Amino acid sequence: MKHRSPPKAVVFDFGGTIVAGNGFDDIRGNRRLLELCTSNPHDADEYRIKEEALRIDAELMMPLRDNNLDFSIQLFQHLLYDGLQMKFSVDPQEMELEFWKSATDYRPMPDAATMLDSLRRMGISIGMLSNNAFSSETIRRELARHGLDVYFSFIVASSEYGICKPAKRIFDIAVAKTGCARADVWYAGDIFAVDISGAHAAGLTPVWYNPQDKTPDADIGHISVRSWREFIGIVCDEH
Image 1 (tube, rainbow, N blue to C red):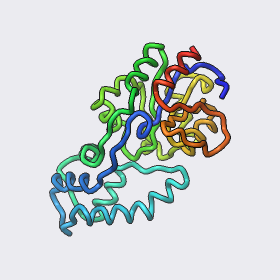
Image 2: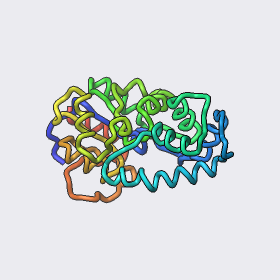
Image 3: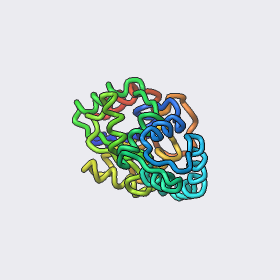
Image 4: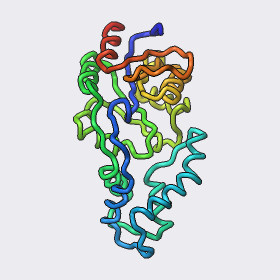
């Protein structure tokens, strides 16, 4: 695509873009929270908890997502565990974090750190916008594990706003946080229908992180890159 202007800010997706996830093990997460449980009158084990979580997800979460709405993991856990009459020795934020640490396994995408460092040295503002039930605090902690948190001036987690990509309003929030004009903001993500279509509709320059060189879902203007090295080359050319 013909770029309207070089980026003054680049906003990134989280999973599948800056980091790669090696599955989501909710059973391990449930087991960790059971270690912190102080009252479990129905003797719910990790599998019973998962069954109830799946029911809540089907009844409430999926209809919300279909309408670009979101729900935080803390509210989800409140609904789940109060329904099972379970109590815990830690507060909701700590429950969220302990579940995350046990259920998830992330690693940085190849050359992500090098790319982020290059952007920072060019004076380009860097942010993150993620469709994520977990909080920006938890996401930042994960980035910190890999030495990547220092690059991000802000993190917008959809669950903290109740709306998710591809809704335009969540992109508007990210643009506002950059402090830049919309035309100067690029958005990079890996899911075409959510990240690229959403960014395009919001008036940002979409960058599709597309290592497998997939075919676009729609004929809309975007930049496609197979690696972060390729991306930084494009940014350097624009500057």
